[in-house]
Length: 126
Image (cartoon, rainbow, N blue to C red; front, top):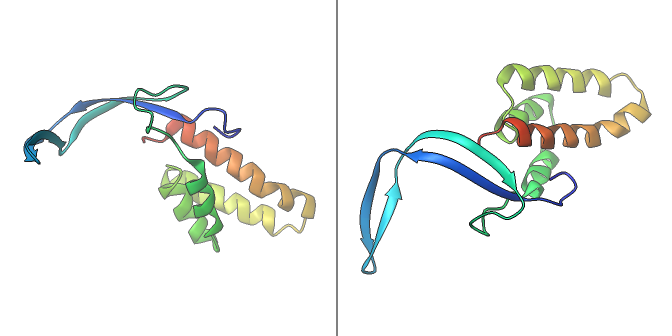
């Protein structure tokens, strides 16, 4: 995903509450809840061709990060980090950025983007 060579997603879930509604003389099942989400996979060819993951939305959200608190919120909301992991990561970023090491600070955004993408692949429920 980071290299934009794969972007399909497949999910497996058990339907909870639902209702059947008629819309334009067609019966449609409206899922109101999901009991369980046991499987989320990144795939080359999803069953529904529209089931794609777009990391550009994550990248554009990252552009809106202006403060350490913004970064913590971004890591929780957009990346699925726990509160503790988001706080620890933001704290480490602040430490690195304030050390005055230009070569480290210049690489940090790319490292952060890679870490975010990997976290999305490994732990986020989509």
